Image (cartoon, rainbow, N blue to C red; front, side, top):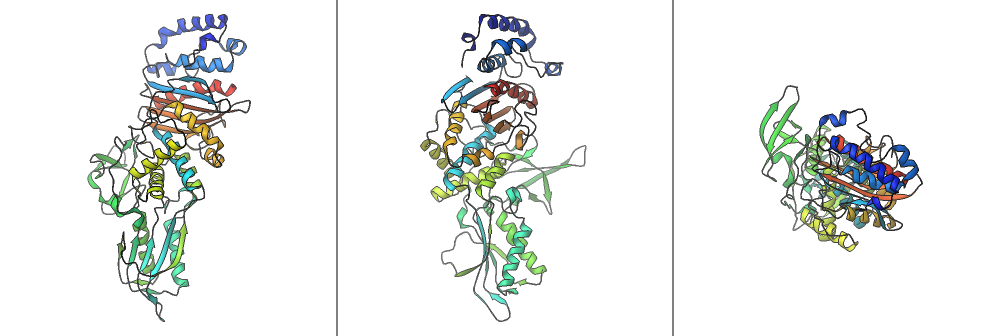
Length: 489
């Protein structure tokens, strides 16, 4: 850590020493009343505002803020690290515990989304196709099968990132049948997602399943990862009319929480078995519209002797750039895990999380990432076994500034006071000047990205706090306070 004392004048030393002497007793012990004081947002500062303006430089003020936070009741017993870095000079401006491995929470998505953009390109799209085998007779009867061919589109039917709804996709499929003159299907609707090969892997260790009343399930679009397979344990109503549903997940063998069930005990989650849902809804729509289907919806993961088929319709997902924008803005865990599996498949032909981790860490190593302290366990940051150092984050973010996709990557990050998960932070100082990925787990709050100073310079920073005292809102206020003087650099 930079020792600010050697930079400031004797007057400033005396002023800061006097202040610290006065404030130490009152800030040693944490009290809820601490944040309720009249000047609670004006966190401890070694010198008065007038002295700061006239005697100390912006860099010295950053150093002083960092040093002061060591005694702050919310942070003093926490493990935390901070770096603000100049990408032009390639030098650290100020830091604290910059080489300490910390739990990064959702700032892990910075690594996942960048790897996907680098390896696949921002214009990459997933395709979901409707095909048919056999022949169509003079009466419009298809003597053959319909095929719904999935490619692992993580946005399928979700409306995320501009993705079409199931209804719209089905409408296109029905129109395609009409163009082919098909008025009856004498065969099955076959779901083919051989891309996934039926792989079910163990989850990364220490994955958070219940966090701040949010339910998380690892991504999957095959029958192998079907939420309907979970076992319902109990339905419980609290004092309100809201019901909560608890069940055991076969992937983690522990009780977790879901938001709702629909129908006869079938779990509805943020990520249903997308191709199966699409195919079943398609069949229902065909029957209702007078196009009978004699067969059933059935999966076929592999096909040793594939039938000759003709394409009827093809649905393209939003671009990877659009999906990464949505992922980072909303900190979407399921999309991040899907990106992890997708890069695994593209490089290793195997869409498992294990392959994804190998690909991401290999890409980072090839890109010169500082691997010391890195433990990359999942694509979203839900695992508490993830670790990364602040200095490696800032050097990684700095290296991206020379990439052709940097502008798109930067645009995907939430903007302080304006968008995404940063919309309610930096409402005053820093509004529109902080471009960063947030991370939140219980007693973990992180922030990493780019900072545009008042003079127009771009700096890179990482700020990670583990095991803090008080509430997450208290930590967010401290984070804002630490970064505030950096705007003057």
